[in-house]
Amino acid sequence: METVEVWEQTLRAVKTHVSKPSYETWLKATNVHAIENNTMFIEAPNEFAKDWLADRYEALLSSIVQEITGHPYELTFVVQDPSMKEPIRTSQTSTALDLQLYQQGAEDLLKKQIQLKLNKHLSVEYIADSLEVSLDDVIQLIEQHQLVAEH
Image (cartoon, rainbow, N blue to C red; front, top):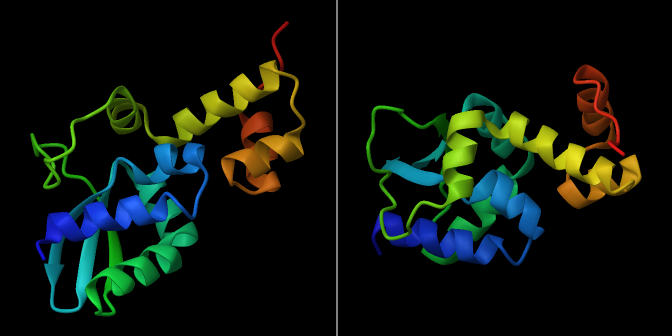
């Protein structure tokens, strides 16, 4: 099975384990860069997303990759090389969200999602749960960027 095919199957499988907003925000824009020995290098659009994926999704992704390939790979997350015109995973077309994640970074997108939910007067606890981020992270972003519900 080709590397691209393995990652596409992995992404399809991971959709059943995470919420749609989490998939769209953190996983959809990832690509497999290379496999060397027992390590699979996964590209993330920026440093923030790379760290987020490593902290929160590495175990799930490793498990799914092993299930698909029958081989336990160590996953290493790297930042996409901006000079690459096309990602290795070329069978899927870029979406506006992919472009937005790449250009603005995942933290900016998360901040916008929090602001939209605040505007709907949703609780901070609900926002954290729906975005699959910690309550402390949501509160920190709200305070750091002085986010408030707009009337």
